[in-house]
Amino acid sequence: MLFRSLADIYEKLQTFLVAELDAAVVGCCALEVVWADLAEIKSLAVDPNHRNQGIGKALVAAAVEQARAIGVPRVFALTLEEEFFVRRGFDTVDMEKLPMKVWSDCARCPKQQNCDEIAVIKNL
Image (cartoon, rainbow, N blue to C red; front, side, top):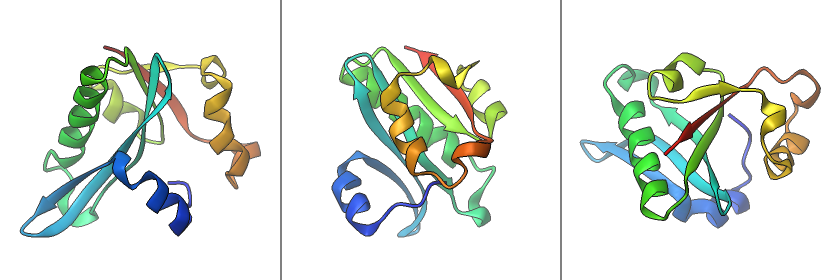
């Protein structure tokens, strides 16, 4: 997951979905609209002690529903867990097919020259 400054977190706080269990945060992800026809699922994380319990699946489903509700027809993610997204109906695509706005995060990433993330996209 990319580093986010505290200022960036506060700026994007309203884009986050949070999963709670017994009053504890056990997962999160954000949906960020990139363009009129495209949104990104970002910062998907689930507490290691709560993995394989459907939390990540529920967060992605909620983000997809949020995109549908606001009329965004495509959702993508950059991930190290390709199969997780494929099981949720996403297709693997060449990252270079994504718009330049996506690359703004890449410009700040320490792995920029050796990116190991995989681009996945879902048409809604």
